[in-house]
Length: 141
Image 1: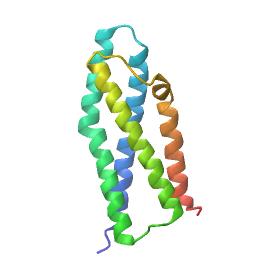
Image 2 (image 1 turned 30 degrees about the vertical axis):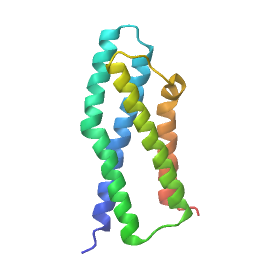
Image 3 (image 1 turned 180 degrees about the horizontal axis):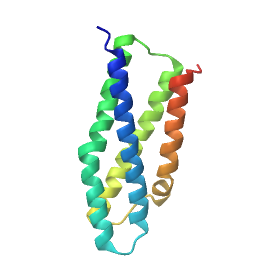
């Protein structure tokens, strides 16, 4: 039985959940970083952080596992398009960690660091996803 289509479907579903969660994290972190009402921002950041820990982070991990299994099972390395795609996913994983840390700080009532990255997190996520999709479909190199 060929498991590749199932792994691919799992990989894509995990990506949709992960990216959706990251966009929510980015928007909420940006909003919370600009609010003066500490009670509302702490509550919202805490809620999104809990959602992220239960849904978004496991989706990211599932995406990585499914992707790694597909690469190992099909020996697709070292195609350049795949190496670039993995690098972009690493960038997104780092951004996910940064947003998680930012929400943790906000939920704890601490000062927010990296306003430039927070402001640009939504755009970075969308551009990175577009690059990943283009690389996966077009396989330009």
